[in-house]
View 1 (cartoon, protein in one colour):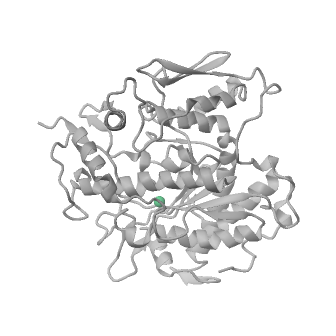
View 2: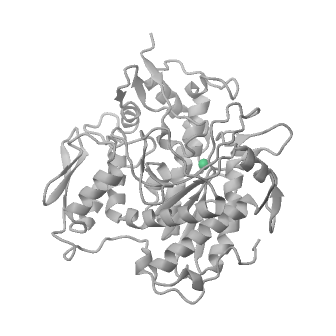
View 3: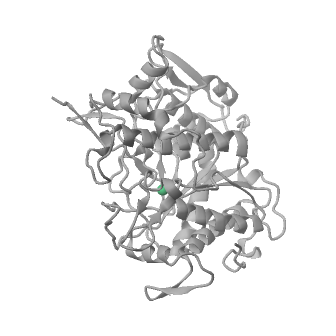
Length: 468
Ligand SMILES: [Zn+2]
């Protein structure tokens, strides 16, 4: 008898309401989460070793020694605030992080009972410099005239792959004879419109992805054995090889589906992270996505009147995520880098610009199980996504527009164009330019203010000539 059910795992769902689900955790029927994939991965890669690192899927072995560089760079109050209000909002096992007046004791390996001791700065005045490669707005040299983004290195990360991969990554739907909607193509279109706008404002702009192809060299076939092992460990003793059709309710329990998601999400985002962290070294990454409500059958999707906007920053780790040594390590590294101090006001400012220009209401998550509302705009949530966790710099993750809302669908069908057109009775910019312009305006507003300039002294992107 099958004691287990596979359950949606929203942690890695890049677009919260789209019909993508992934199941690495086994959930007992009584809802008690137990760790499974970590046992598997440890067993696969560290067979026979005592006290193996408890590493998440395709995760890296934590390098705890680098935290020596962060000794006395943070006060106790600041550390406790970030743990309580941003990163550990869902609670966690008490032995993972223990905060005293002078130190935080962080669990490195439970089997070996090894801990890292982080010493706090006594006060703000004696705090040592935070080692990091990215530069906060306040540390940038004054902006040159008309160039509020000068000296700033921004990486654009258009979400997903698009092109021939869109169906596989379940970011595809089609209504009748109309043009298929592929999120990965839409995000790349926005990035290509946004880049010249930001360059005109003085920024150096880099692309994390600039084609409808993967950045990872791996393919699903490389993950078939891992997929099979994951399924077996998760209570599917004889996993089926293939999916019957896109609406097959058991598709997630097939080797094909699991090996594909290992490729297009886990491997792909980890590869992008390597590119961001070791090659691009930006001051900021802007992740561009379009949101969706569940559309059901992609060949006959549900269209809705619902439309909304939200932005994400990293935080809100689940208790079971923090059990993984690598996720706990990456959370602490992010906390100590103080990316949050930069990305939260940035996200709030961009959110306000996007809200103003799109007119979209804030998205409200149906539960608070995986997110925590942060900031002052009402549009920003903390959430532990792979990209927001792994890119070692401030990351602002944009989720405007419900692709399968009727209005957005019509605007996407209209394509990109200059000026305005009447769509559904209103004169509108192309949805791609509205997106790009509003992000650019938010960035101008934030950096102008943080660098001491006035946003009104700069040419806003809305009045700038369109650049192809
Ligand atoms: Zn997305």
